[in-house]
Image 1: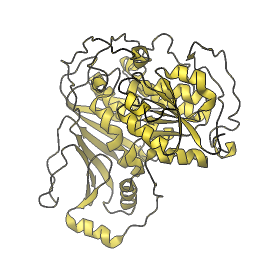
Image 2: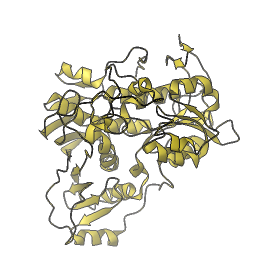
Image 3: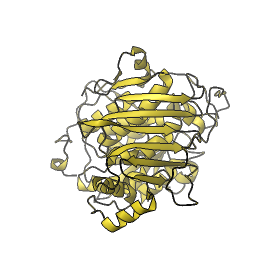
Length: 461
């Protein structure tokens, strides 16, 4: 990448460390300036390392392989769940600890995909960015609000190309929604109603993470990562059920919220919500999220300007769906898995599915009105999914749509819902200072306690 094209920080090739120690595979991230491998020093082909290659990582690795050379694979269970993917890349170096991977191969890596449980997004991405690596991180960006802000500040500081994995942000439907609503087809946007059948894994106050026999070769220390909670290996957590845990996942909202909220948050240029209220929640514990919740968000600003009337998101999970609205075509029911209803002062839009891939104005006369008006296409379409958009941006010296400037804010919105659930009260949010107004006990939920040896120096705004 031509450094002059990067809007954040020129001269990325300075590599200064303030007291940083890189030894024994553990590179403490006290880096002030990181080496920057721009448009690749490898004949224009990116060398990509992949962290997390089982589960969602399988498709992320496959997509990355279409855009560059896979030079390293890291997975805590690389000989187990990761084996199928690893066998497809026999020339890639294999690791169970990404700190050791960076220690041994930093100068051979241009970009990194991160497809691991939510709590490990932050440390893996921080290590990578401090070394000047471009990063692709699966949603949600992190599972604490403080970490989201730190990842945003790190992206600015190190000047790398970043992307969060929300495929809907590359889809046609998101652009149509923005174009239709800016053309006034629904009048003044007022609110969005969301729902999902998640969680589709065990999740309620009765869930316990029972100690089990750790499979040979599985690196549980790296799986635990930054969390100060000493949790023995449990099959109730790895490989999938960790989503139920506040410590490692973000519940149903963290799983689907970034996908569903994305379209309206972007289309309406919403700021961070000022108020969040939990209208209903089933019982939960200090370790496990509830099986059902209904959460109302209030946004008083859009594009930095005060709204005449607050905009609302209303979220429900655990299979709680709204009543079928009048005006939908006969025989059409609301999608069981997830969907959204976007309400304006003059018309409504129904989008089935999780990624705004299907838009329908209702009643039918309003859909016909859009067909007749043919709103102008104003926003560039994306060819390929989020991994390709990210690698294309690396080559071009630009940023993709779900870069950390955007992704950190979107994930903050999602995590505010969980924060309100855990506090059990309506919250007024001070986004600038990452504080719940008048509720100091929220601080421990905004920033976690870190395990010794996994602490990161705070980046100041």
